[in-house]
Amino acid sequence: MKWLTTLFTLFIILIIVLADQGNLGILKVVNEIPYGDKAGHFILYGMLTLLLDLTLMRSLPDHSPKLIVIICGLISCVNRAGGVLTTIFPQPHVRPDRFDF
Image (tube, rainbow, N blue to C red; front, side, top):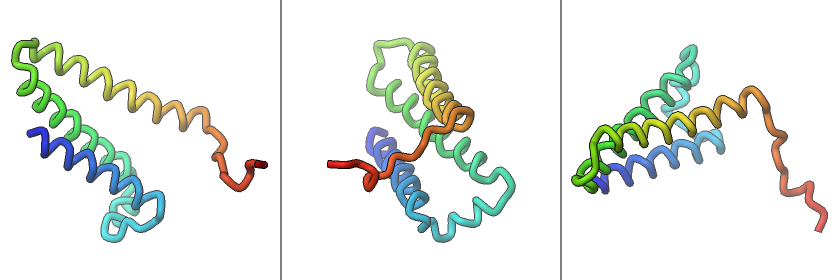
């Protein structure tokens, strides 16, 4: 289960890198659907949270499964709240060519 969670995390990182470069390929169709990117985020991060919950439940059998799920859910909520805050309060993009060294 740890390997599956690690591979899925790397898959999400790969999608993020490809999206930043504009090379999504077939996944570009998802962006053409209204709110398709939001649905994609919901599905991908939901699956990642499920995999993390299952991995931690197997790795920490002495701990309460409810506590593990609550902690993973809170971490996921904090992560998503950070994304929402950046849409409300956009930060200027930092460009490396603007630094004077």
